[in-house]
Length: 528
Ligand code: G4P
Image (cartoon, rainbow, N blue to C red; front, side, top):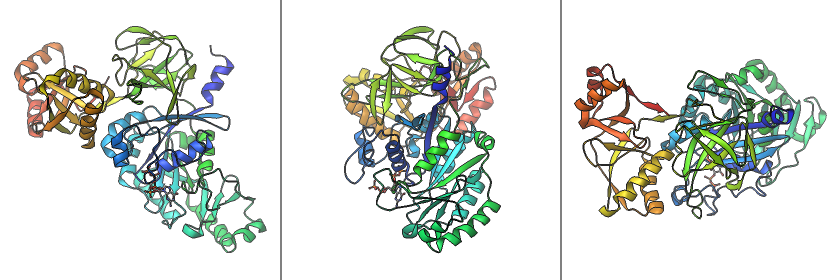
């Protein structure tokens, strides 16, 4: 199958996510990106917090109420001759696990920064995550239609705080009410900004050459200022180097306003030109699977229940790592060692879904999950390996969950285990009693679970305090683990996937247990 067409299909794909601090403009950028991808007719339909309109991806009431995006949505759209997969990530830090796993499924990231605020907390944390795989980063300094900080300061801040070199690709002319446009350093042209065109694709006026007198006519005194500024900028900043970008060492920087739909296309041009074509992934057998390998493979990085309440189904989001998906094909489910025939995989378009005929490495496909799929599961064309690097994190917050109506215990357990498989929350069942303990990384996850148990499983649950402050997955040789189980029964539980877990009332207790049982490994993350 390694024909020219196959490689062409793979090479035209770009799979990326947007990372940013809440309110920096991720939703607005997404909306404008989709507008360029012709996936939306008019901007303003992804999310309208004030207007009460909501995108199809905002499928939960809770999201609407809080104005946060809890779920990861996937959007595929064409841009120029390329096919772009954009993975949306939850903005709220309480859903960081979800975000982390989504970032394992992309090949590059767009970092959106509010140019009035600069680098903010959440951006720092997300960048740390992207550094684990040295994911290439493109930067967009947003909100130039407002009074922003000095652009040179912004670049300095990114370099010093986020430890990545900056190569400005465009440079802003003026800001706020006086924002005139940007100069594109690589194309040697000035692109002029017009206000009031945010909902459409702008027909921008472009002036070629920095010394072109037209530029003086168009922007007056700003022209000379720009010329002087650029000398300074070119001397003080880095030049764009593709190799350094691909290694995650240097970020091309664009300036614009998502609201005014200006600069988004410059960024997209950079993305399709420079961002990596689909990258391969590492397996547990010390092998590396390349995207161009013609045998199909992929991994599940996210499971989402009831995306469409009408369907009441659960979808596993699978990143295709290599080869090609074809409707009706057989896949090997590595963890359980079985072959499954898949004829109803889905593709996603701006929150809508459609049956998929074929998909290639780099794409995200939706698999209907009838209970056999978990986060981290690998599908192959018969090989037994599992892709590595898709972790669960030990929760930091715990509550006991109890039913208002004790007759529905079975429903509650089913709901919790399904929500745990999805990664929405983690659930622990102690060895010594019938408690159900919910563990979360962020406090909002608790609210989501109770809301979803009610909406999707029709159970009313409440939380109670529980004396657990941390958890660790437990590994070791069978004999040692058995012995440990006998001695520490009081503090042991099974998680949603039946993995043995130590649940500690205090950190001191955990340290003591670690000291007493040097043969046991206590892990804060768990890979499938
Ligand atoms: P987020 O997803 O990163 O949280 O940010 P979002 O796009 O929702 O943007 C946060 C706020 O910033 C929104 O205003 C949005 O309109 C505004 N915004 C985004 N890009 C720009 C820009 O380029 N210039 C200006 N001036 N504002 C921008 P809001 O009033 O909070 O919400 P809304 O009612 O407009 O949705």
